[in-house]
Image (spheres, rainbow, N blue to C red):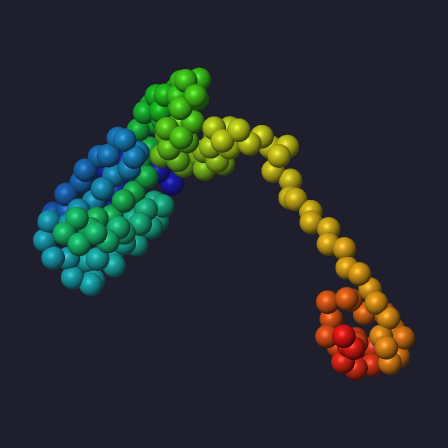
Length: 162
């Protein structure tokens, strides 16, 4: 649920709103809400509840701690970033393009772009199967077969003779 600053302010009381500073981060497509004073547990909880409602989270960074909320008012910026990522791919700058896709929260596309940059196609993602051959030898006591690397016979439990 992406929101603008105005809709966030509507959900917060005027007293709490006066304790906060809002900052748009167009590069990361989010709104940062920074406390300007000590909030206390009650006010912090109220803000955190509203922020979580809109898909945001609290980022603990000491004096730079803040709430981060994804922002819908940067929708036009998403188109610009998508265009930029496409151009980076054309220029074979796959890691840079993947980072742009991650900013847009397009993680699957970012991974696909990284694989393209490493020269790994989707067909090469299959798991490698390792087949191990085991030589079986007869037990000297019971005659049952046991792996050559075993110390004890799996049938009778006798120690293997060297």
